[in-house]
Image (cartoon, rainbow, N blue to C red):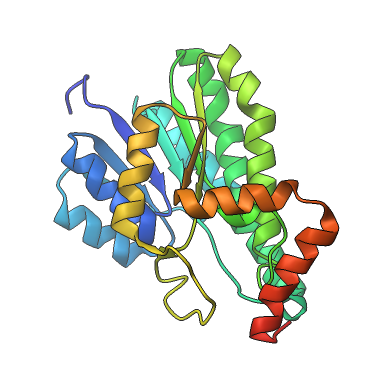
Length: 254
């Protein structure tokens, strides 16, 4: 590998946005390290693209993330860009408030990102360069029906990135939070919820890469849904709950 070849670490690369990002960065001449739990999917990526290196990682296991980062350091392969795409999505309100669902959602969606940043930041700071991007969701803007176990994890990611941005700036590092709307992925394909402005994973990945190339802090899309949810967030609660309540009433589920 040429010393000038940039390295992207895509965590959650075995499907959806993560897989599409792998393809885009390979096409752009990057060396891609693809991580996820499904070893067979990682192997498929490795075989399909010569510049993809498969590195199985379970983000809920802090030792596996530690070992992955230690391996990067030992092999002089510290990523120029890390994109955290891992996530689980359970549809529902009160019905999802169980330990199994909520702990797993928080561990995968939020704490996996925390572990990644915790292990990478010191090394990137020492090197003086690097970029980390965390995929959150527009559902993190406010509490929405049928996202009682999912939305809080995404709100936590947005808050985390906002809190860490000044530290990244002082270290001359780039941090981005990515807030997509509805994307056609394995997580959404069986959902019966209304999904306005839904886009393909490939289109979402292209928008994300464009924003990351510009080192934007927030990459959010599609614009109409972003605008609507940001306006909803600044409404008084009586209006907020009336609107989200109307949405919940149409489905008649909790």
